[in-house]
Length: 183
Image (cartoon, rainbow, N blue to C red; front, side):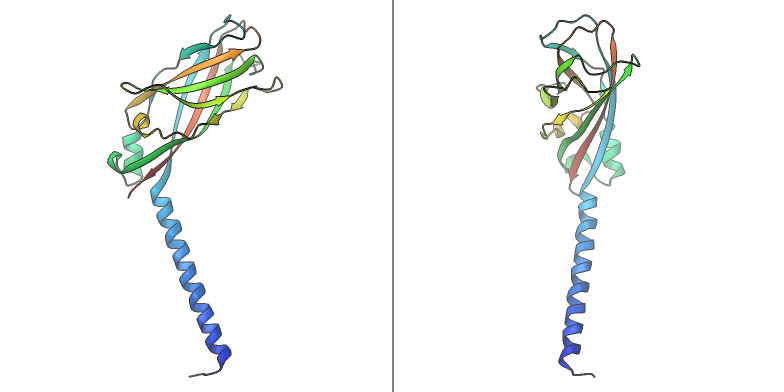
């Protein structure tokens, strides 16, 4: 066996690196098992001829969650889910084709589910007049597990317009929820 001090340092360093690498990979794997995303979409309409500088509220159709299937696909179940937070909420105007979010001064989006209080989940204030037909909202990062675990929920939208809108405006919302669960 080789007994030079440099040899022992190289062997010791190699073992430390190997153990560190294996530990990092194992932790990364566990992290992936504990978190995943659920994506939902819904379309809704901002009706024409609503007032300026006055909050206007309207509901969306029910959003089926398919949460049980998403949990199963990720090797967990509803009882092991610890936390669900809205990660992103993006809005896109789908009709009329030339419409933009320019008339919208602010928007608040709430989640609503039977037996639970309405909860603010995303918003955008002081929307610039230069905005196009897509808008990314700020999320509140509230824990929404009670809502998303249900079979469906709906969104309530509250808008304040800076100028009148003379056509119904169809909006498509895309949501991504980050789920943390025990495995």
